Image (tube, rainbow, N blue to C red):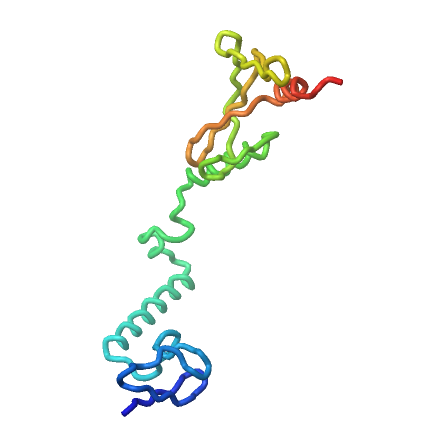
Length: 178
């Protein structure tokens, strides 16, 4: 004899045969018949009730902390706005002012923070051999040139860019003459 199941979605009675086993989907509405997405209402066991009471007490205690002007618990736990070190906040403020004053602020390729300009490096003839590009019949970049060095204040990754003046000279070399 078959067992009766009622679809919790469309309330259709489903009769299934013991030889074939229970239906996974309702043949009428196509919804799942397992406990998936089902809400069970009823009395919880004593352990579950105690857990809920403990959670409620913890939440009530946390609410008292937020309402109180005495934040000793936050200090003890290292939580809240007081856990940030003053030095770290000062460094972030200084870095932000430096970035704001820069003409360019490239993003760090590693962590996507804005990088700060550390300085300019001049590359002379002794330290650079230009590559000859056959398409333009000469070098793309000639020495001496300057590279702007940037450092990421978050992960200390370094990056360099050709100076603005040398970028313009390089573009002039790459522009075909008519």
